[in-house]
Amino acid sequence: MTVRAVSGIATYCFTECTSLPHSGDITFPNGAAAEAAGYSACIKCRPRLCGEAFIIGDAPPSVLAALTLIKEGFLHSQSEEMLAIRVGSSRAQLRRLMLQHLGASPTRIARYRQTHFARQLITETSLDTQTVARAAGLTGRQQLDRLAFKTWGHPICDLKPNRESRSSNASIKLLLKYVRPYSFNQLLKHLRSRVTPGIEEVTDNGSYRRVVSHEGNARIIEVSDARDEQHLAVQVHSISYDNLIDDMERLRTLLAIDEDPTPTVTHLLNDHLVGASVAQHPWLRVPRCWDPFETSVRIIIGQQISVAAATTITGRIARTLGEQLSVSGTLDRVFPPAATLAEANLKGLGLTDKRATTLQHFATAVANGSLDLRLTGAIEEVVSRWCALPGIGPWTAHMAAMRVLQHNDAMPSSDLGIRRNASRLVGNSISSKELDNRSLSWRPFRSWAVQHLWEQ
Image (cartoon, rainbow, N blue to C red):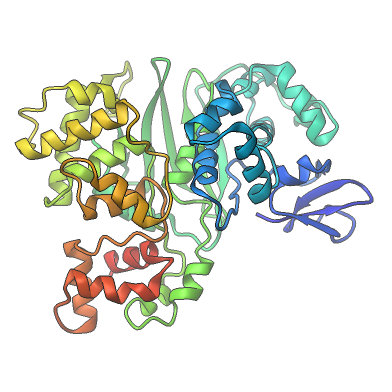
């Protein structure tokens, strides 16, 4: 998201802020780039919420993968060197590419996110500074104060409203700003039939709830529409808020909060097949995922069976193989990791022998690192990489590209629901190959066009 800076006072802010004395004479692609150039963040406006959308255009796969890992908290405990190794690059090469495409180094981007999320917590909650620092993935107050001084020229305590502090409480509330236009109801409608029993749910009062585990401690996250046409409201119930920033990032990814539909609307608006839907629903998003492995397993289970059946089987896997948490209520499970699923006995869970074998091959590949669920690239590369695994075909690969890798140009053309709705719109039966050919004009936004077809 572009920011503007005023060179005379060495301050930058986002375009919607009216605090700066006059229009900025310098622009940067994001706040991290402005800070890397020596500008301080505006201290008068409401803090920018966690999860700023970094626009990276035609960046290579290593940059995309590195940014995803940074947003998931990789650099909280690992070095830039390890990040570079993970994405198949050298540290020098990765830093050069990040500076070229994002204007800031990997560490600068990570610290930028942590510092601004800490300011949101300081502003919106009564958590004490030490707890806020750990919630942002930092070691403690001293590190946070150093970063705050670099960012705003003030220690973090100077940014805290005059309110009583406490180290923890039963719950905290945060606002997450989304890119407009946006419809939370659209995402809830998609999730309602697909949530994994015991792990997540869509409630009757219109909220999404999920349980996560941090060092064995359960954390319940509930998100609803703030009804101000700008934010989602998040309530977090926990006895520990360590690394809360990572959970908020996963939530933003799942609900596609930071994705801008405008380029897609412009590209697809006049299409005779999906143009009418685009005009009626310009806020539509492609739902993504909370956890790459969990969602990948759900997609594999869903091969050639109904949504309801896939949900039931995924719930059985969670209940049978997932860690049980000490928490009251129906949400009390954590999805099993790849290593557990790779060695598990999957008989009696409703899977065919072939599907069970596919799942275990897939889990083994993820566990031993031969398949990296963060590595993206051109859609042809992604499909080839996934289809090299036993039992994985083009439909699964394209679905994973859409949901897991956040790819905008996936095309699962063999999907029965997509073909059925496309056939209805054109007035005659359409084959997968015909739909593939028809979709060429939708590139590079085929994932979005597909979502419009699903929701016809």
